[in-house]
Image (cartoon, rainbow, N blue to C red):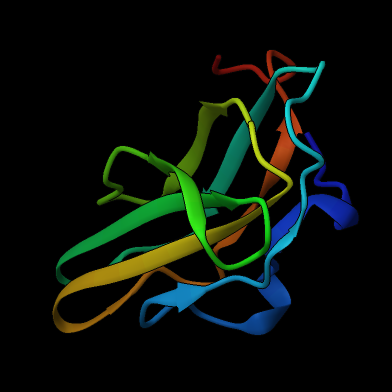
Length: 121
């Protein structure tokens, strides 16, 4: 399933994910009527024991965190879907990269897609 450019937290064009990042907050408009999945595409996993932790922070004002969603830790390349239900006005994604010997997950993409419209549900 293709990403909608308006629902992207991180685009591949920003380059390889080598360190932790905080995405720009964008409007999620509170509770969705359509179930959504956070889609994470991880093209690689270089380094020794690389780990990728992803969380979604929700807010009503763009800064004070009111809701917090933690995704299962990623350690291998692949395509991942995590169901998410928004309750607040804005959201942003926090990534934390761990490991030794310069962990690198490649040009990771993170965005929202409608739930249930992909092969590996």
